[in-house]
Image (cartoon, rainbow, N blue to C red; front, top):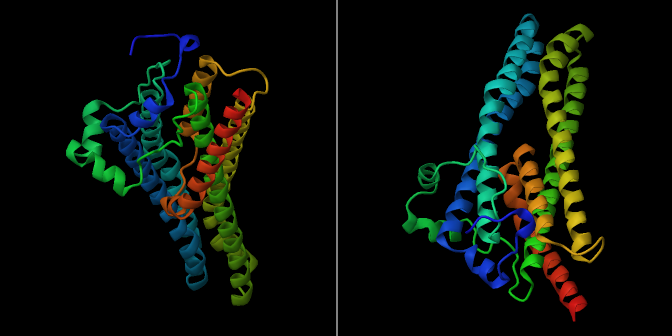
Length: 310
């Protein structure tokens, strides 16, 4: 599309965006971003697997072989170092590529000008290698439920459709992140209580508990706390963005223009790039409920806008 400035951006008709999000070029980007996010989650899973082993094995080793308590602490420290350097860097790289690819999908569907060239956007060859042969794009998209990604109604004005889609994305992620934070917070609390109770029942000394139980698992605990705090912060950012967009859709604080949509899109990218990853198992469990809520909200907002325009 010809180059335009953000203030001159005018979305295409909703019917065009509805069709565009399901064509091969869009599905290729959508499949690529999904697989890049999954790649980032695998690196996160490796970090957490090591933390889980440390959290479960260190107390047992300290009770059975008190002399190895210091070794357990050293192993925990080494893993936290690797997790926060090599593994986190690799995870962040995959996340940045996924966020940039998802942004390209949005630009394509919304007919939106590219305001900033992302160095993290994968090359065409890399995207093709990730997604596989073009002849399989439609089948893969159907299998992974990627068709009709955004809740687009042809009867809505294009600018309303983009705003509703951006809000839907932010709200959907907010719900998912809050669920993940609750799950991890609950598991962490249960883990701590279990360690304390088992240590008391076994009757290990205070020194052994501190050196063999508390210190080895402390790095893992702090990593979990940081992860949960990051989840809650990311959820708040998305919730604030969703509310801001909703207020503008409802007619508060003036009408929406092309510049608003570009600014919100930039904010979405920053949130996607910096947010902690949600485990696939939680995503799959909550997907049906979250998508139903997202679609319902989109329909309500669209109906409200159409009534106000009558």
